[in-house]
Length: 428
Image (cartoon, rainbow, N blue to C red; front, side, top):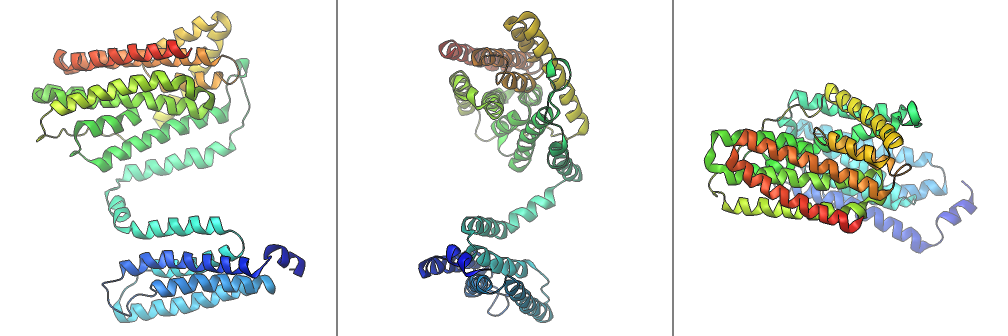
């Protein structure tokens, strides 16, 4: 390492002191959490406290400075020496207190590394990692409870989610194939990952919230996964307890209201230019739907909670394949109908697609709006699919939950559709 390079990296003593101060601060951040957690276990029982972690971070910064002046191998030797000291203290604690936890050992070594990272000029990365580390250390009880509640199928589902997103997605070709080059394997699978990920959020939110939160929490989180499924589940409960129609209507409307911002999120991720054109109609529809849900919730009994719907496996390969097939078919039909019949064909497809699923047509039209169709056409097609899907849920609430529940839901959703249509007219 040449002197010229060192001079460029460390231009003054002020810069050196700043980086050393940052290294010390990082150690104190982690040490504050470790010291607070071990405040009641007695003096001398913990491997390191607030002062020790602060000094460990500072030690990492000092040794990084020494290594920059001599050789980076010095930093490796210093890390090895610290590791030996910490491990010796760890085994001493095992012998005295029979405590085999290794978290503090790893945290001490990581603190040294973060101090060195700050001195080497990567202060922002070091601060970010220190904050994340502190959060992980502080969330130990919650994380352990979450792991204890994790069912085997949920663990497998999470691993499958990582498989399709981290392993499969990067290796897929990013180019068009088939008729009109409408099929892009990377883009299609990325959309599958997007929808599956949103469903994951909804699934685990429902599980963490539990049954005590009632129908509204079920509706909001269920709307992230599938507003139609949430509507079906809550409508069935109306057959068992007709005294809770207001609470159930509130949950169904919350699920339907969640669908609108979900559409906005999906469309914006695919094509950010659609955000403003879709914002007003979907915001108006969401506001009225949530307002109706709130009013019905206020009318529902306060001493009763509705059980959450039966949750299915958050990820299944069969579901992913079926959605992929549906998406491919809609992509081809959308491109074909748009070529053969123009905008009218695309609107027809949007209406039909909304009968079963609004996500696939939203993804397809949003992607087409980047190249083949105008933003106004895309906004109209997406809203048509949302209207069709909303009408289907209104019909389901009447057919399954009964007329009393269905009228509460249908009239509210009809008002939301009309208000959203007004927004479409004003923005297109």
